[in-house]
Length: 298
Image 1: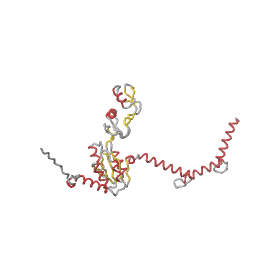
Image 2: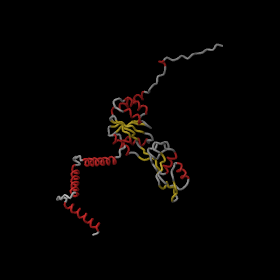
Image 3: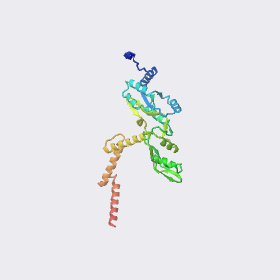
Image 4: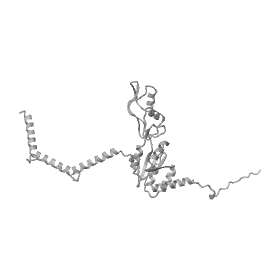
């Protein structure tokens, strides 16, 4: 019996399959790159856990000032790589988390962030979501009678007692740290207590403008605190100018008034009999006389 061995021929390099990129993907990358060049301000959104109905409403609300576009993360990354005329633009790739989308606008990025933030609404947490901040069960009474709920609270490290026939949380308790994935037990307790720690709405993660990428921690400006800081800074600068003897149009009157009062004090202490301070000197002398009289018990 003759055994026949058929040796598989190796295909020539030109016969090998070449990875093919779908035309629609190429077109999408080109379109995104074009938009990156046309708009001076580009934002990165995270659409994770965004309800479809609210997404439609937000798109309608911002239509006049911004254009929002959803795409796949890898296509956005490729489009970013094609942009060569915007310094530091590649840094946007570091913010493509969750379910990314793009926001194109010519409006002030802080104004856009504020508008988006004002159109968010509170929502209950769901298991699997990431805690946006430390989630706290506040101290105080709960609507629950004593029972299994005490054990459930105990598993989460919540200290309780029974007061007036109801379970009371003895002290503020953090049940999930910022950035930690929320589990079923935490989500259940928060919902039963009516605590809505999540926000439903567009999540503007970062914005690129003129070579600078602003993260949400910078975009989320507390306007009241910002104004208070400006007022305080202005007052500090005036105090520094006055104490250093550096006259400006805002401090010259204060400095003259301060110098005048200091000159009067010197005149009084040195008993220099000038018309403006003679009454003060006499009053001081009378006070000292009365004090001496009391001390001598006259």
